[in-house]
Amino acid sequence: MLRKFFLVTMVILFVSYSKAQTDTTKTAATAPAATPAPAPAPTSPAPTITGSVDAYYRFNFNDPKPGGTLNNYTSFTNSHNSFELGMASVRADHTFGKASATIDLGFGRRAEEFAYANPDHPTLFAVKQAFFSYAISDKFKLTMGKWATHIGYEVPDAYSNRNYSMDYMFSYGPFSHTGLRADIVLGKKSGLMFGIANVTDNVTTMSAAKYLIAQYSTGSANDKVKFYLNYQGSYNSRFSVTQFDAVLTATVTDKFSVGYNGTFQTMKPEGLSSGTWWGSAVYLNLDPSTKFGITLRGEYFDNKDSVVGAGTPLSGANVFDLTLSPNFRIGNLTIIPELRLDAGNADIFQKSDGITGIKSTVTGLLAATYHF
Image (cartoon, rainbow, N blue to C red; front, side, top):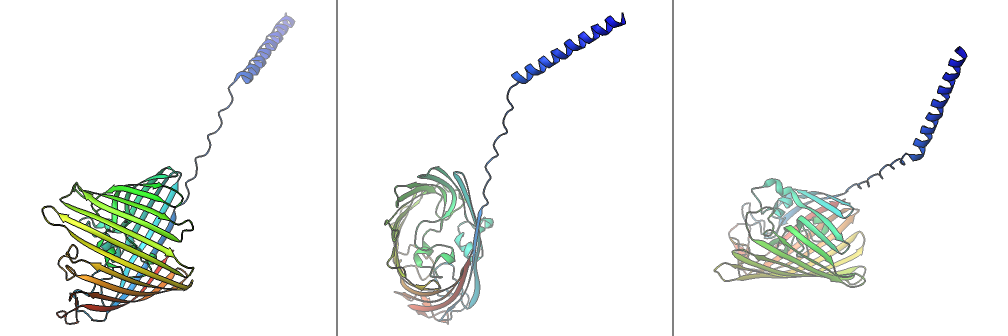
């Protein structure tokens, strides 16, 4: 009996074991393959960080008194007999795939003057540029935000200019635009930009008025000659503004280059006659070595229609300025001792008494810029 029981038990265990083995084999043979682990997400690259700082000392040889005109009608150097900080800037650029963004912050009087248009929003003074872009293709890109103007030869960052003091065309033209623009590549050396923006220099506004902006750019095959035709024009506004601007640069030799900027702007308030200011400037650049260069700028600015400079002697005047700016370069540090002559067709400058008007004035300036 016991033998039969043991035999039956062995048979049951054997059958159970065999079935288990069969099921295990079947499961292993018919189970779906393991899902592969997802590929790791692309790693976002680190942003590119750059920056700059500039400072200067300005002395007008007519020694104007505090509270007067200081014999200066251009941007960023409205001081006399004083060491001044220009601007400290920090910029971050980042690209990830087809998208990119730029944050460009500036601190100092230069940044405040650049962002003058929104005094009720002082935190915006530090935002020189803030925009993001998306490249729909390698020939078409959209950008939205605030960016420095495309109009003119000179730029707000001091280290990017060979003259430290600014010309009249920069000072009374646009500084920045806030809006939406498209950049289109037309060929190997040509491009087109067009867009819509707030009223010039306004980051925020309740006005329904908008500006159309555009630029056509081209150049020679060897990049030694470049040309830019720029435009801005208002619409849906109680006054119309139209500005055309041309910039031409030419590398004559490896030590000598020429730049040219010509512009005119017409304004017409509603119900009133129109007026125009215009200007023209030539930049002669000589670089005998990598450590030394010199630039001579000559500019003529015509404001006889009193379009800009309201409330100042510049209203209704024409001015010629001649600026000589040696550049001593020590790595990323550039030292600029500058001598400037401004001459008007009327007594728009003042003697040291603050009363007597004169037609011309001479200014000395010592500036330093550094960028990284």
